[in-house]
Image (cartoon, rainbow, N blue to C red; front, top):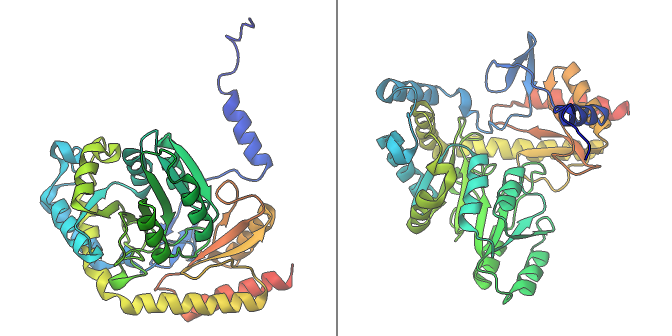
Length: 392
């Protein structure tokens, strides 16, 4: 046996970092200071921000700030423990009741983050004899949640309900303890939407448990901005407040029975300190504002449709985007980085998205529109992208 006592224990770290540098996939953090809802300061330079998920501009809204401060003064800076110990302040009950009414469901449950929710909720529901059918373009948090469930997972072709139906038919009667369909409603990297009506119909036909992540739909789509699942018989909805909600945190919208189950079986809730009162204050204010923001939602949708049309005219590929998320699918990672750099040189922040966040050969820059973006802002973006096309 080779004595490797003197082997460099950090060698695997150096190897991975070197590999990422060589493939131009090394991620780095940059310090930024928000100036307002659509401008950000990087290294002393103000830039237009077209990659934020703050779709309604609520992160800088005075009511969210005011309510956060009020809740700090009343309840303190932290919740001090998990919700099952002593962190379940009365404000959680108030927010969850408000959210359940807006989502048109029996109950809601607030968790710390969307990633935490997805990696702990799915394993709580599934056992080793379960089957999970997962959309091929689901967010990494859903993918990790499916893996942590330690059961059979089959990936169906993106938004292909025929393929999903085929898999449901093939696996019916094969002895699985339960079958789950897991999808996003608005896909975070492609900006397209799931066919909610068909998914609900398939779940009912095959007695499957339907889980839908509404992170990028909450606030932007559906009745009163409550998402594409609103009004549909979806078994479990997962959403976040850190995007159109303007702050942080996640939620489940479901039946009272499922809520009780999660309180008893979801590790992400049981073993995590509750969200601080300031965040609950911001969530409370956002839930007050979002139902009344049809005008802002209309602005976002119109700007997205107009921008997509202009991009298509220039020859950019935007895939199946039909939402406020518009990917410019470029292909090579180096080319996506070059477009991102060109935009930054012209005062526009849109980061390049590369593998492993997207498949090989599908690197892109991902545009996210906010209700605070004006026509002038969009014109600046269009002008730079037009120049990028002309000089390729």
